[in-house]
Image (cartoon, rainbow, N blue to C red; front, side, top):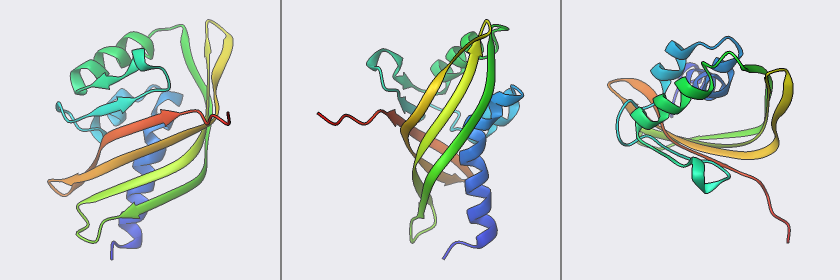
Length: 138
């Protein structure tokens, strides 16, 4: 079973996958995601699907390094973390509130469903996949 410290490390990576934006710590962001073609993100709209680290980095630099963008707060709710028996991969699910301002106008998500997968590579945990979606109750 994975140690409590390792669980804390994984939880911090998950938090920092959103929290990095509060102070625009791009070094932290890029250090916790897979820096290869395996990295993948599904966003709620199909136009924003990201395949590969380079595409992600280009998007992040364009959108988040822009002076118009300012992250304001985020909250992870009901975070569930699972680590495989082999301790080589982990996955999470939670609800996410994530807010920002663009040129001073507020924006963001409330109660978006956020899931993801981490893989242990060279004794480090890296996020390899994330998925964001809004519930539909039709």
